[in-house]
Image (cartoon, rainbow, N blue to C red; front, side):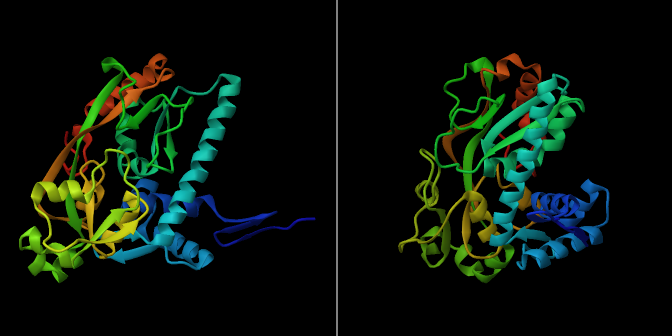
Length: 325
């Protein structure tokens, strides 16, 4: 006969030994906000309670999940991997509940938004509360996050709205432009201070710096080469450190490991928190546009139409003004 035991914030039940939902919810909120105080306000608890939850989770995993600083917290490599796993787990639970509700036809109206994982984390979830207020409390919002942002998305029959660079399949009335793609050079305050003499000089002298770059760029997406073409090129060959995703590159930059190419619509949370600051001038536009588009399913869903209207006014809900179209 199996044991059922609750020890602190851990649950040992049958084949599973997992953190309690309270711990996981606290971790997800802290990771999304990059701040324990913001997570505490969202969850109507104290910062000390959030800190205790995170500490218990780090003890359970025997890994440090956050780097702490005066201006906030940022995920470590282990923290980023665990955060992605938690999002997948929460998403599966949410989708399962929606499917069960749909069987009886008694579920509330909902809208499902499909996007790459980093767009979910850095864009959609930052506007989740504002979107919920715009749609109304009775509408359930589901975020269908796709882990691989470097390949074209597979068909998503359950999605009502796509957040995408490629909206050519949608008619003009079924899509809106959220922002024009623009990129800039960002680094942590510590990195900026340590390399102030170089960063305050022309880009031609930046060859001694470390540039965080993706291992594979999505087709047509901005790279450091686009930025160099607009602002100037280092006299010596740039030194790149290759990472797997834009979200990972941002975390590396926050940790002070180099310069990151920050996308205007994804960088706002870090700029607001002061964990990343711009270098070398303003943003450089690439000509691409980021869209919200209705799927065939979404065109029949009034809540999806309302969601599209929300994203049409996304600049009103921008984070720190950095993603203004």
